[in-house]
Length: 247
Length: 226
Image 1 (cartoon, rainbow over the protein chains, first blue to last red):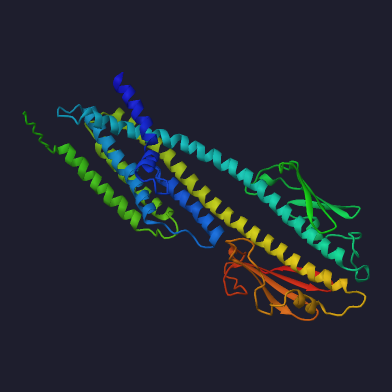
Image 2: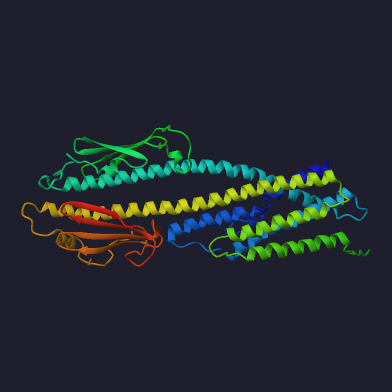
């Protein structure tokens, strides 16, 4: 009973150990040490993208990251399987030899069990996260594409408003303005405009399911997702309204 | 005072463990360092992971050999297969997802780059356009002259973009052509990749977005060159 409780406590400690080491021993370090090496590589890849986003240059792999990733590889694939399987062999063959102290075998066993307990929920989490992130990202991408089109329509309308009627423009209003056909209908959305006194109301709604952006499914269902905005007489876009998936 | 003496004996099985661990460290480290680790960790991590799985399989096969009972050997193999299957599935999913997110971040950057350039250029040229037509019916200055009057320091080939925030150093808007009837501006962004990786930009960068804006009396024409 005591041994079981101690084992459970050690398992709990082992799952918290990497973060604890990070906070206590190396508080000045920014990179997170994890037992699972692929999580470290994933973190670096995303940081790489963010660095290119901000500065245009990738973030190079640091010496600390090299050491951490090699350390986690050796821990997961070399040290823990070796200690675990050799002690398992000794246990099943009941060798009549002096054993290692109990605390060592408890540490070894708890470490391996905590590793297994981390891997299985991590895998399930990764699959769930992948699905959720892609759905959210596909909606965001289509929404951004529509906002971009609305901006282009608004720019064209502003130039039209400024141009005199004699030159084919609006002469100070949006009367007679028609967006180009490439703006009225894109791959993902259709747009319409409506005059309201000195203002222009631009409406857009999806004509294709945004969730199909990165996957193919046999469905024609188009969920509700749209936006509406007012272009005022100064050429400013105001009162953005989103409906359905875009809300 | 009792003196306690500790004698450490290295038993044969302990020496086996030590040798196996040393061999594993050499194998996994060699695989890890054989790959490029400059921009990305994945090649090195993948090589080390493959070497590590092969090593773990070898350790399991060595330790579970006879006289260990067959059913224990089978259970051990099944436990190994389940654990490392989950690890591989998580590994591959994480790699694919992280690279996907990396690419999405860069796509967002491209969208933002094009949008900001479009808004800034449109605002700049709309002011020129409005001032030009405000001269009617007694037009005194050409379109080019109005633009030059509003931007006295610019000339063909120069950048007229002013940074909008502290880190805004990658965006440029060049005056390509400044004639009496037309103004051509070219917008580039060193932080945003275009459609063609080998496209040579106006400012000698390669593969970045480039938009061409032409203002005439009839209005603004946009052309996305990359």
